[in-house]
Length: 95
Image (tube, rainbow, N blue to C red):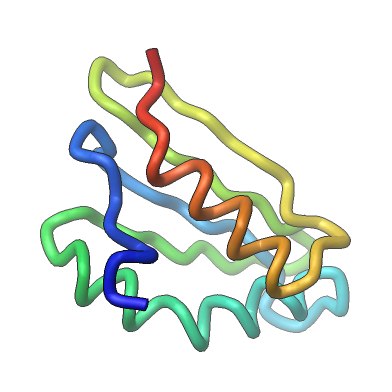
């Protein structure tokens, strides 16, 4: 599991947006409570921001060099599907 959350070199920032109480964000909260410590340990110099706001639908943003950004909705995904979506965003550098 140590290499699972090793981010791409071109990745500058990761942001998670979600609701702190809403059922639609429950899987995202569960994923983050399990995976955040591992992600931060493997990538201590990359900001991983957690943004909670009432009524916000879960989404992840990955910002790369030159201000390029990719995002993906996490709404309706299971914990495992969220893990797959996050892994795809943080390991693939934008071209």
